Image (tube, rainbow, N blue to C red; front, side):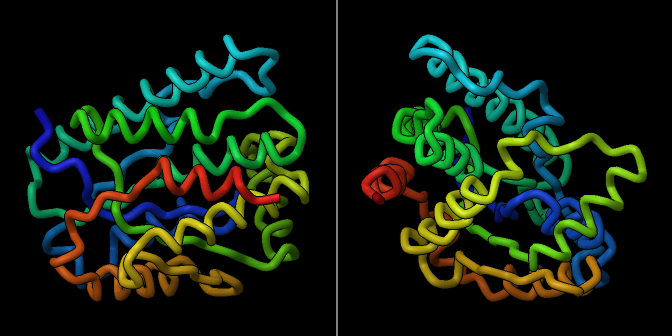
Length: 237
């Protein structure tokens, strides 16, 4: 049984805004070295993502179950690490909001998606204490030119190409709209939009850590309302 089902912060944003490189840099930030940092891996590290696009309701239901299964694997990973290092800082490389935002972008750009259904599934699993989710949210942004430069560097080093759907301008716009909207559902000290721009990962990591340090203990157990959030998204025209 999970005793605490909300903990830590998720770093979110479109591809190539610097999420993973910042998390890696944070591991060496002097002020957290003593207590350490637990990184909850991105979903693809836990297993393969659902197939996309989807053809029918059956595909969507399978996709939702697959995402929840991956989230449970991430939770198992986190629980194991917390047992060994209970006082460490917890940072999620993406979280449920990325998944819901993806579904929203799919629906808004003409594909079959299920933002509200997935939000309901996440909410149910959190309330049943089957998964642990972040309660803080850090949204990275960057200029399109910088994102393209980072992508070219990754491709040149042999990294895999991001799926075409996630490179579509309308999709990216919908994703960032979904990320920003989530800020309306969180206390101020739990939401930050950070332009990574031309900053190096160490500088961004230091800014992230400064934000985390400023979070009050009184909001550390607040659980995001995924259902109301998804409803607000699908109501957008």
